[in-house]
Amino acid sequence: GGRLAIAKAALMTLCGGLHPGRVIACVLDVGTNNKKLLEDDLYMGNRFPRVRGKEYDDFTNKCIMAMQKRFPSAVIHYEDFGVTTARAVLDRFRHVLPCFNADIQGTGAVVMASMAAALKLTDRNLLDSRVLIYGAGSAGLGIADQIVNHMIIHGATQEQARARIYCMDRFGLLLTGMKTNSPAQEGYAHNPKDWEGVDTKSLVEVIGKVKPTCLIGCATQAGAFNEQVIKEMYKFNPRPMIFPLSNPTRLHECVPEDALKWTDYNALVATGSPFPPVEGHVISENNNCFSFPGIGLGAVLARATTISDAMISAAVDELASLSPAQNDPKAGLLPPIEEIDETSARVATAVILQCVKEGHSRVESEDSPVGGKVKVPRDFYACLSWVKEQMWRPEYRPMIKVEHSDEIHTHQY
Image (cartoon, rainbow, N blue to C red):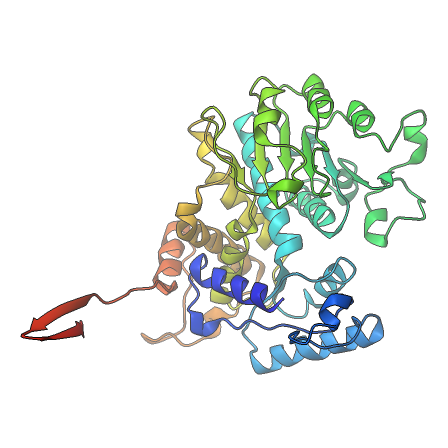
């Protein structure tokens, strides 16, 4: 947990351009249920079973509100919260202070951006999409939420958007009234009467009825997208979107080579781990590093009071607009990782402009170093320049070796 927190804080600097002195990694240690760790003399964490319920809620409330009191302009980025707690913590605080969850919103935003890029590439409408998500845990439902959010921003009602999303877990397709449904899952459950005569535990049969345009995997079931599944998708969809997102690589629902081969190289593929190109087709990695650093940077620079659905949707649209596939069909759906600083700057710009538009920004009430108040440029490219001026970049002064007789001196300039 500690290593992951430090790594994600480092990514805000590396990918988002936030000065390392302005990023703090915090770990909330609520114990562990791992018996091996509890018995390990070298384990540095709390040695008691993981706390849940009211005690957990009271602890997280106290921690997060203390952070807000000590750092009132800070943006809180949640990472690696548990399946049963991530959504609850996000929902509890997202309208109290600027915060977001990279596992739920960040991953969902990148998947939605890949989907939006694929739709544009194939001249299809977002609101006509049908999405089947194989894996209905926090990641799958987070992806579903971002797709629904994006559809709503682009004109659909919540009911219309959710009707286009189908989710499966280990009990099969989510149907209303199933005792195994969590409250979040129930929001994506469909009427059982519409599914009479269909084996809702069979991915192939569900695909045959739904005829999805996009198939997303986040169930960590290696090989779940087998040849029969992919060809069933291809039967109803000449350019199917296949996103096997489970990681590490050994847990992928399918490998890109198979997804492309089984669709005559017509599938639009993005994955959850890095893969090499297949016959010249670049495989984009749906890594949330394409979204959360830019969203975080934008929220920090705008001094946002909240991170709204529309701000995340603006990030999605901007990320999708950067897809190299628009110019080369064999290129990736997402920009290359080598351009991550430019990508983050543009995502941050879109977030800031939406934040200002919605009235969630406080930065223009601050004094400017050059006199008067800070003014955020309303033109996209002028705002982009404003963002880049404030991004931190590592600049190392050169070391020059100077030799004097038998001594060697190193000077830094």
